[in-house]
Length: 602
Image 1 (spheres, one colour):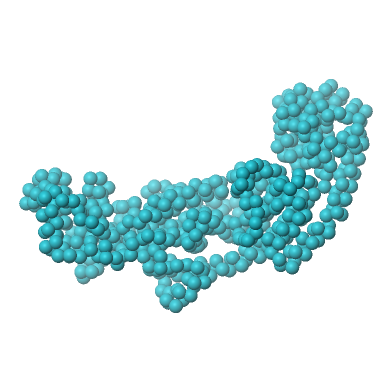
Image 2: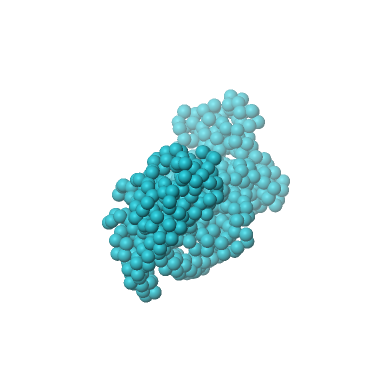
């Protein structure tokens, strides 16, 4: 529907008018004719408007005159026709200059031509053009409707649209709607382009990039459901130049595609509910019968033989973020789904085997560790087994300046002590956090990253750690952060909610490995550490106190660092070991604490 400015110049009173600037824009399309005699008319325009004006409202404002052309071009208007010889003797120079720069047509209306001479014939021509286009288009649109009603699916519908507009068409959503359909594989819309489409809520002309390279003119129509943009339907100018009829086709196709999106969303919601309910039992540590675990793992394509690292994303100030929905629960739930799909898409792009699920206002990510060591491995057993003679032999080697033996690292508690993907998982959480700020302006996330634990029970432990990391980390480090539980250190036991279990866990990660090592090897690492602290970190005095060589002392301190992952030379490492020793001393006087700290010896 619509006629070009070039064609309009041959209609009615415009035949007696002349183009005085912006001749390069004469192929702009006109769909509406509007009379402008108020200063803020731009806010009421729909795009593709042909304005008639005497400039009376801004006749004395040169700056407003020059800005007007840029404003009209920005909203997609077609042209402006100015009546001179009434309030202005000629078209202002500022308007002419801006029109030349933007290729925006400016027409000077002849003194003997009235608005009615232009408006009535031009509107009749526009309506006639639209009627002819609609009549020629109806058989194709009927065919498209039949394809949709027969349930042939989105790929078949898009193929039909391709043939109607004679150009490739793509539909971009966060749902798997185009599986198996070849397309131009577009590079995603920019943040600015998505923002413009969300604001406009109607099709816009844009230039987009294809993956094979090159800028391509496009018509992009937002797919709007429940007042939210859920996708983008794009017609790519590849076969021939875009026409106004293409816009009509896209607008007619959008409701049909929206129905397909709603249908698929309903199916996905049902599947996700089953997945979320099942995963919630695992996250909360509820017992799952082995048969059910195996069957649902097969159905959902999950592999619980892997060790997973848990990341929990939580929206900062969720009530404020969703305030714009004014309590509309449907829109709030749609917002949660959009957030879940965004994280899920990013996670699957990074690693196919990730598991992503929503729980309340959180998004839970299970990141599989491909090379995580089993906690029952021979290498780890070697670190906690042996004999007193071996410990004595190690001291002797230390006296001779020998280094620490291979395989000395031990896991802290039950967590995997070291894993190759540690930095990768934290970096991914940072990328998600940054991307969310762009995709959802004004919103931030805090992410809690747990240590990896093996087995299904380890998933529940990891989830609890990730949630605690968020709770403690927000207080200690603020919002919009990625907080690794392993980095919280003493914050975990300084929290008002810390209990004997948390103290026991802290102990197990610091002094616990030393106590067990001493018991199983007849070593004296705890005695050595206590003496080193008592001697104010003086190596010579400590060695004399223990009646050992300084090299032996250095070797033992190195061993302590390897077993506890605490650097004795750092203030944080010393603080953690100091507190661990205090808990060790306290446990011998408090029976309830001793039961938690030393479960294996009580």
